[in-house]
Length: 62
Image 1 (spheres, rainbow, N blue to C red):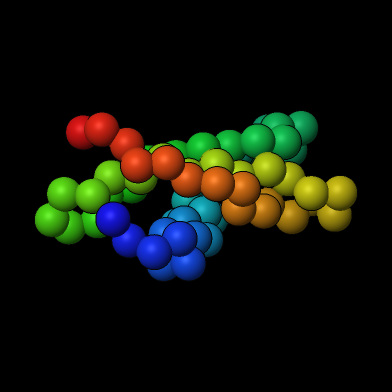
Image 2 (cartoon, rainbow, N blue to C red; image 1 turned 90 degrees about the vertical axis):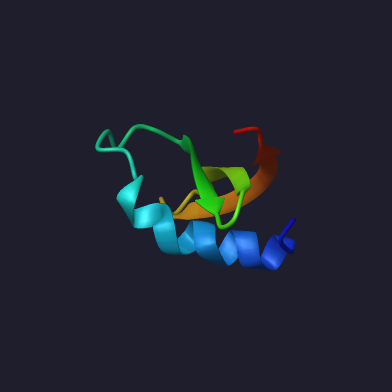
């Protein structure tokens, strides 16, 4: 398992590819995998300034 800071940094790097087209959405989540076999689901919420903020992650089963 990777440190939280590393998972958050990777999630923030990937975030632009997952931003919903609907501007009314306030939450999003997505999965990613780090080699060799660590998968994570990350969660974001939109703040009052419409900026996506990392909330949490969980290790995902593959």
